[in-house]
Image 1 (tube, one colour):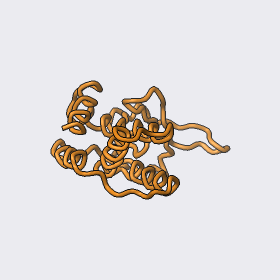
Image 2 (spheres, rainbow, N blue to C red):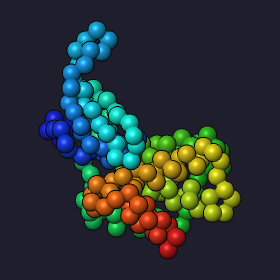
Image 3 (cartoon, rainbow, N blue to C red):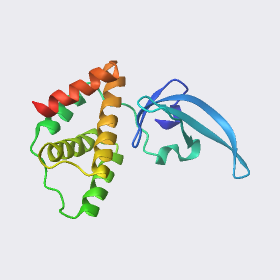
Image 4 (cartoon, rainbow, N blue to C red):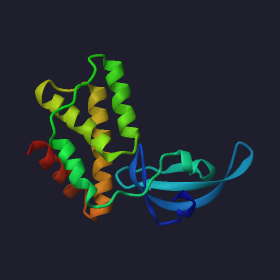
Length: 162
């Protein structure tokens, strides 16, 4: 898949969500000329540079099919899954799930943190994790369903509160 990426394609980055490939350019790095994929995440005002030779290991993937969001909504509506009482283990587990590239695992993080937020509140770090996971879900929905950010966010908020 990655060898066929071209400028203008939409790819999913595990940490930044849906991103447009805005350029493929050569840059001097550590004394060597290297080719980079330049990504513009659709939900963030930033650029991400990925060395082309490492693109296969960066976790980039194609967007899911439209129908996959049915599974994501099912995950959001399920009961909260059991998590570790140890903050560090819970944090590592949430980070692994967010960076897995699997939308259902990202949805699980959103669901668990959203439920905790409604009952006990979240720490600053948990709020950041929730926002990051929610943004990744919404960004992929934006590109797959061709809707704006507000529609995507409203869709997931409805799923969480239904």
